[in-house]
Length: 312
Image 1: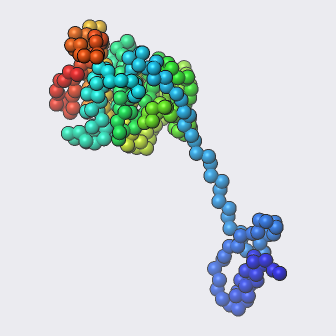
Image 2 (image 1 turned 135 degrees about the horizontal axis):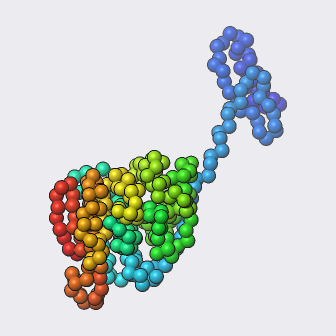
Image 3 (image 1 turned 90 degrees about the horizontal axis):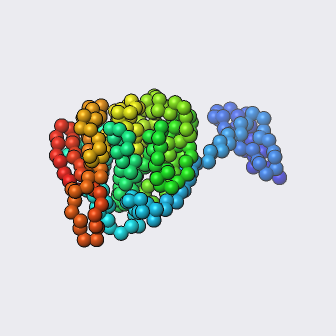
């Protein structure tokens, strides 16, 4: 008995001999018996094998260690610092989600920086990310962009690995392959990446700009927090600032000179939203029941030439 392929080929030949104009058809060759299609009949092209989808690696954050270090933990009981960050994050989230007084371009890209080193910017970036990740409608990506002195992974007790620098150096690398999923459901982390002798220069490269554009568009529903280098120590932080929708400038109380703060703010004047956060501001807060004494945060918020000052 003739196979279905042979019968179809014979029928095509009969139609053509009868003068019927038959468009060139395709007949798939039988795979089971290794038969080839009749001469003049093209086999159906086999679909290309799809490439495996890159999967982000899962890492475990030690919540007890976070709480001991004074970092907001999703499992920790209510604390003073957690309450402070609830107030600090609110205007940032509203701007990021387009719910503020006006639409902020790239509002979901938030850079946490300082004038000089030692202000507590990394501590602030991690706390903001942790606090925002507790929101019901918000997912967060924390990026360690302080490539000269990365500290996010060390503070969180996680191993270093490929990350930001690798993406900038090789644009064929998929973001998902170096992004880390955590045991905080709505928090992912992008490490600084493989150390490079020209790491700081890479932040100012065109490849970095393309990566930022891709991240802001691909994750429009996600808030991305960058722990960046200090503004007065490198020019790369200022380049990053030009692509951010919001910037948090951390100032250590009783330490940073006023002239340094003013100079740092002048370098990011083009950013529409700037928030100043006063770190380790003792004496601003009274002890409350269950809290005890400690350090706290005060901050000022500026949005498009309108300034209001609040204290947590």
